[in-house]
Length: 288
Ligand SMILES: Nc1ncnc2c1ncn2[C@@H]1O[C@H](COP(=O)(O)OP(=O)(O)OP(=O)(O)O)[C@@H](O)[C@H]1O
Image (cartoon, rainbow, N blue to C red):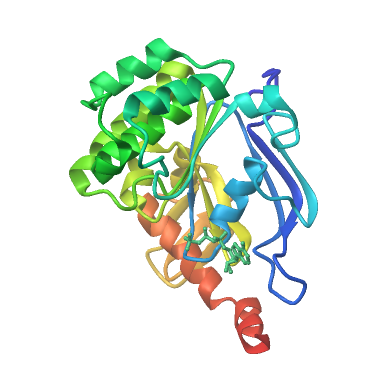
C-alpha cells in the first residue's frame, strides 16, 4: 500500500480470536492481519481452518472472543451506513425459493438505501435470468448469479464471498467468476473470497491469505509471494532462505539464479503441509 494512500485497510485484525465454546480449540487464534485496499483477496485453507468464521466476523454476523477487527476502518456492521458498504454472499448462494427473480430485486431495493435497480436489472438480463422465474427453479449457476447480483446491487465498497462457486460445474464457475471480476471493476470495490479451488483463486485474486489451524500461515500480494518463494536445487538452505516444505523456500533476500520458480498452488500447498505437520499441531491433536 502506498504510504500516502489515505484510505484505511480493507481489513485489519489484531490478536483476533474466536472460541465457540470454552473447552473447544479456537476457530481463530490471535490473528494479526492487514489487507490494503483495491485487492481481490483469496482466503484459502483446509476444512475447519476458520475461513467462514473470519468472513462472518467481517460481516458482523459473529463477534470476536478477544482481539479486534476493523473492516474499511470501522467495527464490522458498526451502523447502517457501514452495513451498506459491505455485500456478503454466503455459502451455497442462499435465495428465497418461492420468490421470483424480480421479487428478489424489489426486496433488495426495499432493504438497501443505496440499491441500484438499473444495475441489478441489467445484470439479470446479462446473466440470462428470467425475471418471472421463481428462485427455487433456478439452476445452481443461475442461483449464484442472482445472489451475486443482489450482493453487488447495493453498490458496496467490499464484496465478501464464502466459497461462492464450490457447487458449480466448470462452465457455470467460469461465468460466475467473470461476473465477479466485472462487478468488482464496475463498482471499484474490493473483494474477499474463500475457496478450496486454488485454480479459481489463481485466476481472480491478486492477494492471498493462507489460513490453517486457526492461524494465518502467509499473506501477501501474489506477485510478491511468487517473487520471494522458490524451489531450492539441493538440500542446502542458503542464507536469507527459510525452508517451508520439501525444497520450497521463502527468501528475505533476492533468490539466487539457480533456484526454480514455483506456482501459487505449490506455494499454498507447502504452507498447508507445513501447518499440518507442525509440532504444535501434533500436540493439539494429542490433547484433543
Ligand atoms: N457455530 C459454530 N459453533 C461451534 N463451532 C463452530 C461453529 N462454526 C464453526 N465452528 C468450528 O470452528 C472451526 C472453524 O470453522 P469454519 O467453518 O470457520 O472453518 P472453514 O475454514 O470455513 O471450514 P470449511 O472449509 O470446511 O467451510 C471448526 O472447528 C468448526 O467446527
